Length: 290
Image 1 (tube, one colour):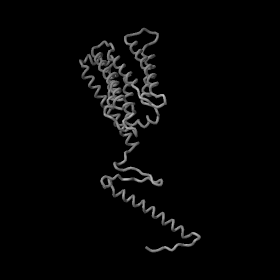
Image 2: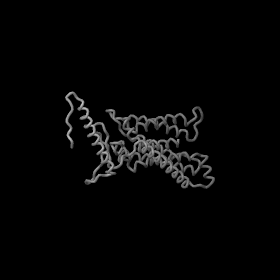
Image 3: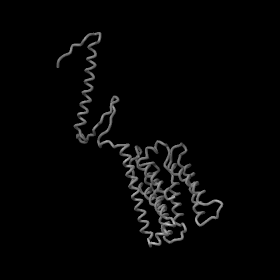
Image 4: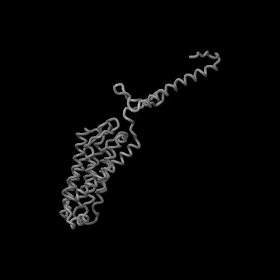
């Protein structure tokens, strides 16, 4: 289950950094896909957290009820992800589910004191991720998909908080098994040092994912030099150099030479047309020397 939170954080990072144009093409909000995944995962948890036909043990009921909440809330989130006219609409249902899951896990009964402390921090981290998501949608983005309507590349620093907290919560939950914590407790390892180590791994994973996405973006969508844009004239693409206070920017000599060659090409085309007219039935034209 911890890997699911890490995967969710990676998906949020991908959509945040390189997926806004794809999201716009789908015509759906991000909460539609989030709610769909939450509903599917809730169905899995509802029927796999308890051995049906056997006795109910310590935390089976809590895990099963958590799965029921997920698929119920996921269906509601899917319904709220569209307006009456069919346009995409953002909602807070996935964030609320994350907050409720964090609250439930923070109160999860455990046998070891170390395990109780680790689960408490895990729950608080997950609740912080849900709260950050609420603030991001309602106040930072104001129900928009991104800050930039054009290409979605502009991001706010607050938007990186939710993915990181999901990474951290995933690692904490993966490291909260009874066997691991029993070993750590026998070595007198405190929950503070253990949690800080897991947070460090989350930082490294966030860095690795961001580097890969930056490499992908630079390869697929290379940025144009500053002050240079493309213009299309008669089907020919030309580079136009931006000017600032009468000064041509970014290697003006090369671009002036390109412009001169373009003009000469047009003159040569006119000369060739005049040469062709010499063979016309009207007879040759008298060429004047310059």
